[in-house]
Length: 346
Image (cartoon, rainbow, N blue to C red; front, side, top):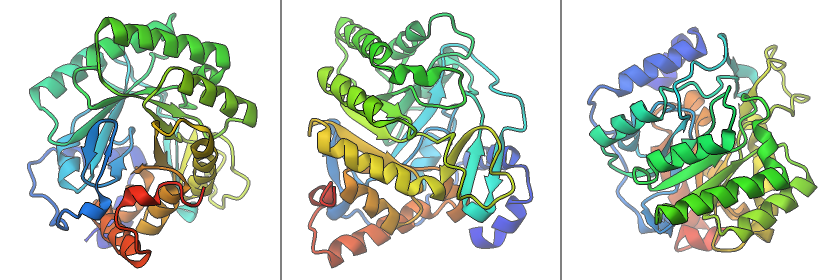
């Protein structure tokens, strides 16, 4: 069905198409006929049971409106956000661009969301029916970005199975300065203190940029290990790497996602897997649109994966199809459980 509808959907402005998709998911539709649970793709991470390793990345359900519908599509976990303390519109439109020739997107949305109070109320009134992550960040015009993270941590630490500290969007000016050793150390120190004060056991993940250099990578690894961070999401979108793109919209300002970032993020996963404390879970993101591309991330060192752009191009049945393909790959490789595959090619 999606393959027949896609040409019509792709005639719409990308952000309008996304808005219509969110509205459609709000209807109480029946679940996609899913494959049976299979122990080969189950894993326990972050102190939680993941019934399958396919998650939807932050950015799709920015305002935490349709997470339970996404579970019905077969996703093993859903991450909403990025949520900021105060409501904000984001950057001016147009701000989302399809690069069809490259199977990619460029977005410069800029953390558009309804703000922490409204989103937290929404989650309380509609409890998640699956493993649920919440991605948090600072307001664009904040005078104290570190405090913004703490405000959101206080608001959401009891509502999510894990919280993601987003320091890597290219669409909020100077946000990536938190990759700097001093700033990241201050941020994670403050988060740890807040977590201790609240006696919170909620796992923390950090979402990083794919555009870091070797020195930044070494500093990030040192600090993540120092503060016993539970997870790292590799990676966000890139505002570089346009050289090999074909589409005429390739030079739009914003973060590039989809197929062109697949190998970039996979190679970064390999590097981090070699150096990180083995108790730290890697969530792999970037260019996942099939069982094969998901398996590539897993053998590079990711325990679970997320996608977003892949669903734009493959449709709402993508989680089901990837699960089916992964089960087949594991069987062919004679791997009993997906945990045994993590990092075997790193």
